[in-house]
Length: 221
Image 1 (tube, rainbow, N blue to C red):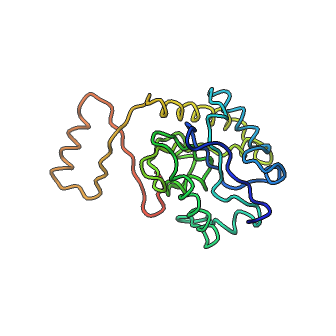
Image 2 (cartoon, rainbow, N blue to C red):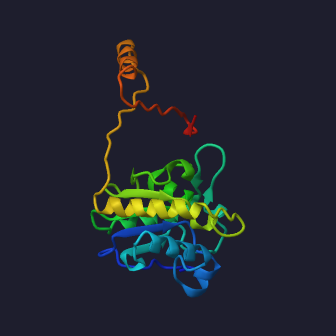
Image 3 (cartoon, rainbow, N blue to C red):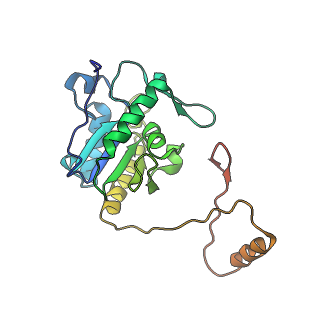
């Protein structure tokens, strides 16, 4: 096992929430606990505001060591990101790890790497606060949050702290079943009659929402 390995913290048998980060930092390596560095301190503050106890959580990372920088395991850029061979070994281990989670546990994906590993979605600012189905662990819900590291230097986006608190509160609502569930039908090749029907809907006195996706980059316009 790697000398920089940081094992998960908590009990999957009792945890209400599974918090998945990207990779331990230098402080986590030193104390051998996940989410105990500066970004972890921000997470603790946000959990407190959301009235979620750290003891209610199982904390882990997609990449569990600091043998190499993140880019050695995970490649981002234009188009879809991907895990390298070394990174894929960690995701396979994570899937096995989380398969022991009890039904109803809510996964909180901290940042882009965790969201991609769990749901194969990109763009944390677009998806944060959404209620997603996990691809890695079918049957469990995932609520992505912006990474707490964005709140501290060098990024210093302090306003993200409020968004993280809000989304953690939403994760708590999901755990308690206090949320609205919507079923979506994605129609990519509507018939002429479908188009006329939808235009007719637009004339009705109610709210209509259009969400246009561009494939394959999944960028919203």
